[in-house]
Image 1 (spheres, rainbow, N blue to C red):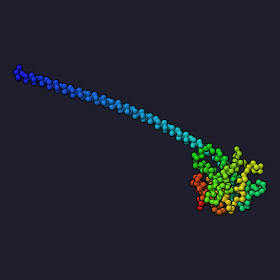
Image 2 (spheres, rainbow, N blue to C red; image 1 turned 30 degrees about the vertical axis):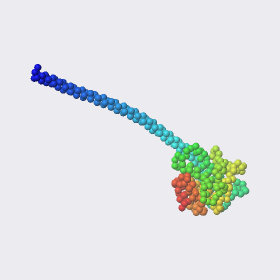
Image 3 (cartoon, rainbow, N blue to C red; image 1 turned 180 degrees about the horizontal axis):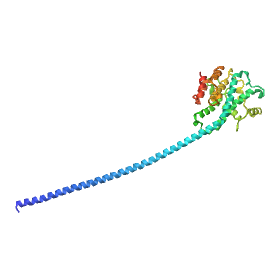
Length: 331
């Protein structure tokens, strides 16, 4: 074989191999794409599965949290409903107790108010000075004592009925009624009414120790209400009722003495007028013109600054009728 033949064979072999290389290259390129697509599809599927699992997990977690929130809202709603129901029932009971006793309290307040007005113009007659005479001969003093105790006894009876009720949630009008009932005993017993004045708090000369005052009231109450004046007189005569402390407080009291008891009784009368003007009948209302005459008649009450503080401490200063009388007192 000459050199020419060798060259031809060589060219043939190289040509054959070159065609196969092209085929092999094309095949590997195709296979590469197939595998690449498959790998991409596998990754895509894997990611889709992961996303689906994550989505389900989030959804389940959200459902759980949503159920918890729903349960909490329902629980709070139930508690709120129970609270509102409780408040409604308490307010209803408070109204019932006040309605049951209101007429008796207003009537007793009016009877005491009438005596206070009469006393302001007749104290100089000294009908209220205790003597050795029997009760009938000292009607003015004993009936004065009786009216004072009856009023406070009715207030006390209502408070006893409300002892298990939450009066703090009463509506505004009923709450003011309760506040008045609470301030009245303070007007008779709280020695701080004399703050800044020359007074010995350790001796109950011009005020009452609260327990002693309560003991006097306890003698007035029955299961049906308050004893009558005849029962009151009979009880004193038989020594079954002891109201010596009240008698001693009222006997001989007048605005010209050096003692402070007049100012205490007068301060109580001012608040009594506020109470009647707020809750009483229209025919019981005391107009400002009449009240001014009362103020002009006697010397200035030295307890007024302390009375203002006491009224404010019971949050009564913004009540309409309280404002009217306070304005006259502080003019």
